[in-house]
Length: 113
Length: 113
Image (cartoon, rainbow over the protein chains, first blue to last red):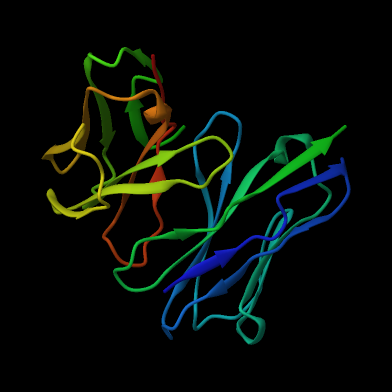
């Protein structure tokens, strides 16, 4: 069975603050894939990143960075210098092979000016 | 702009109505999905089509009837819905059913009166 836990239900920050969204996963498979999606108020789920279980390198894309640690089964997401446009619900997700995508419950990020 | 197009964006229907949701992608993806999302919840998988054949039906009530006329189109036919079926219905596609990320449309906000 697969499980994704996003313990933070809601986070509020002020613009320009750094913020980290936590994601902890469980799977018995040795090959699996982790994802982050952003869902702004408009409703569309926007794909942000995919990471496979054999690649533990951290990744940076502009103000976004991801920290994948197999030892702690975590795949955390950091936004540096947050902006109002970052306000959204962020979902961490997991799948392995042909299993269906398992989503966490999501973290709502509110960035105020 | 999203590469997965869903119509209509909003739909209000009575419990005796018959309506259809439409989804279209032109990315050459061979897997397409319907998800249902209630407010403040993660998306829940309803159906998966792979190479135009239904491969997963997550015990969805028969008042929801999917159809995949070709590799680019996915429909969801609605009949005799209940008020609790009101939700955001998301369509997604992926290159195949394995590790590739899902690309989501903007969704249809359905209200059943």
